[in-house]
Length: 116
Image 1 (cartoon, helix red, strand yellow):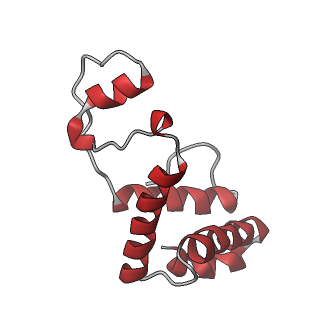
Image 2: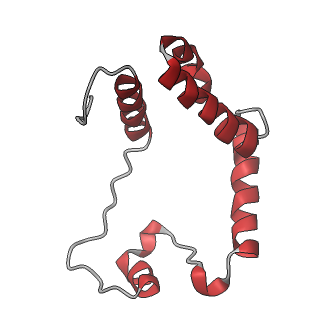
């Protein structure tokens, strides 16, 4: 999505700064300058390897959502909720909604409301 969004930098300084930040943080720092499937998988695997090597074991929970509330709540020392663990994965739709919201807010088209 970052690659596709670069053209938006022409719509104003706030959007230009957002795109520059994304380029630096996501494309350059996280993915070494190239976003493609292989590079994304490599970055993901490197990150997953690095985290347990750098975070103290007592401060790290390696969690799979399929495990439900119990391991998460135990780790955080919180009670397990009475409701089912959420299983909704909006994925791409959520990213697109957040992207649209960022663009419209940066252009000053909306104030604190969702864009669909």
